[in-house]
Image 1 (tube, rainbow, N blue to C red):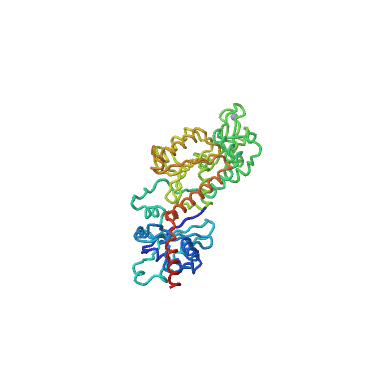
Image 2: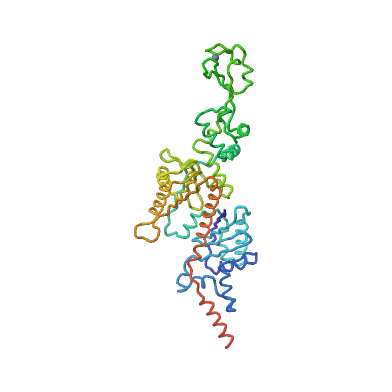
Length: 441
Ligand SMILES: [Zn+2]
């Protein structure tokens, strides 16, 4: 996944010329400027240099009508990181993009940016700039961008941080084997299984060693075949003296029939209750792909019905519904309701089985319905989209692809403001004309 890190400081950039000067200094430190490269290429083509700023060319015509606004900013690349410097009202935001397996470089960029500013702007300007960097959120990015729309998104304070032990992660890995899971689920229903009931291919000893099941011993009356006692181990049978006797036939316990059985441990029961193991599994996949635990919530509840996982990231709320069975239309109704009730922008159904066709159709319709007003070509409300990840073997890749897609979409949103500009070659041509005039004067 790509990690997006934001910082902001109360260092207001006056105009694009200042950004261009800072960008020049940053280029000396090995940062490739993106917008500035366009300007450089145009100027080189015309062999002109000097007074032309990025916004003169990128703002297009009519220039300089839009110049009163906030400066455009600039994007940089260095090594495996990308950076966006985004002037906002009253300050400056910088954003760093990197793969989650690469080291964070945002602090270095902030420091380099500050040094470049100090080297390129005059002291009077610098006195009004405070380079104390704070974390910036994606909400603050879109707010600064579209401040006229103003309102801050409501923060979700519901649910709890994912909480489970490494032991539970190990047991979850065992449960990923379908044969083990089937055995455990059946055991949960029938409560106990005899050794002969265990199907082939199940390594009972492994399940015992890892703590998914444990052995118990039933003492069964030889006369009426009723269970008269349950013992935790064979040793405890030894410890019971001859005096403890069966109420029916008066045989001592040791003389009665002893049957070895398997039962679920408390831990196993807790893992399969409400498919907790799936929450752990999908959470682990998310964490492996660079999602921070702080961005995840478990156990959100509406009217007694739970939403399994919330991924709250870059201003988007993504709800995961996990099912170890087919996801039907009856599951889709409450899920759609809960996602929209919680202000989600994406609902993701993750099932080890499949999603029923009518459930898919319903979620697709709901996505469109919430997205558009009749007769309007563009979304009028926040879009709720629904996705499905079906089949056990598709889940790790499906979740991975999803977080990559979310990260990409967030990164592209940040640079989207650079796409608002037209390309204006007039300043370059004008400078070239001027050069021709003075050369031939
Ligand atoms: Zn008996």
